Length: 156
Image 1 (cartoon, rainbow, N blue to C red):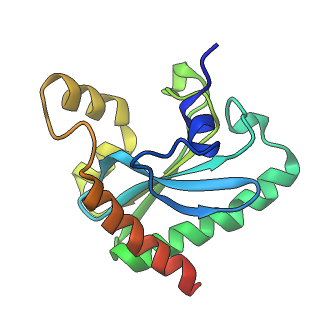
Image 2: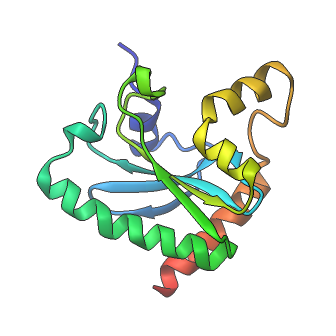
Image 3: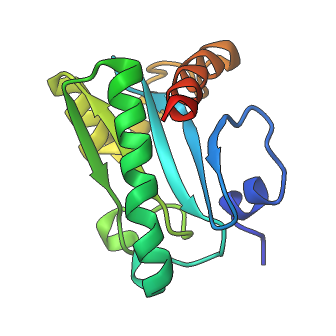
């Protein structure tokens, strides 16, 4: 069975991946395929392979919220976004496409941002089949957005 993409990233296969936070249990990276009008979408991922959020231990759950707050506040400071959407999916019926627990943190300022946040699968289909946007953000753009977040996290 092929190892999941997030496990590969955690183990060091990080080509064009921008890591903005990492500790012994969690990693946060920018979504290199999507962003909103205001900034990077981030993914908070436990390093231990868990299928979805329902498999988190109480200990990991307790540690997750402070890390989520850290990146959310850094995002608002870096991007000056007025809104923020935080979500996850459990199983394919809810829209989960990578079966390794992860939480999306999405800066929002507009209806388009909310659509990107709420319906990433539809947005991805539109991009892939209608050639709407690049398949991957330009590495330089992704790096610059990630640097803003890393700077804010260091200031915290």
